[in-house]
Length: 152
Image 1 (tube, rainbow, N blue to C red):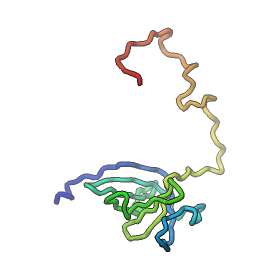
Image 2: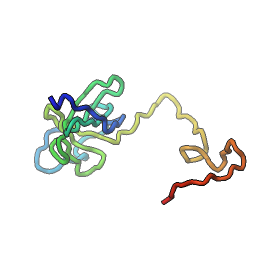
Image 3: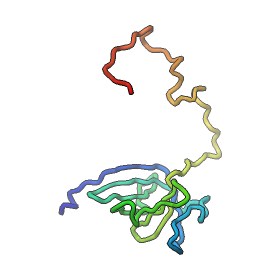
């Protein structure tokens, strides 16, 4: 009954991930991403990591509908549910609930549209927030306000 009263918390959402089916491991050697063809993922979607009680869940869901594609309960890390890939930090092998091992790419690039041209940049500045040196304030010649913040 205590498990029914626990709530599920969302720990992380990664909107674009790719999944690859991989063959069973033939030896005790670790998984290596270079052993597989990674140019065509078997599935793409969203990753959500949630926790309920002392167990975390890696959930792979459809980006639009939210339908669950696969789920891997993680009771401890490192463990059998999540394994690193020896030759890459962006790939992980996760064991989903049916016992199948799949390769998860956490750094999937966003799809590039081929029919529409790229939008022109809004500013010539490389700063995401714009060029502050040319910005004007609503109050001209405003004196800096005293602050109690300490800058480290």
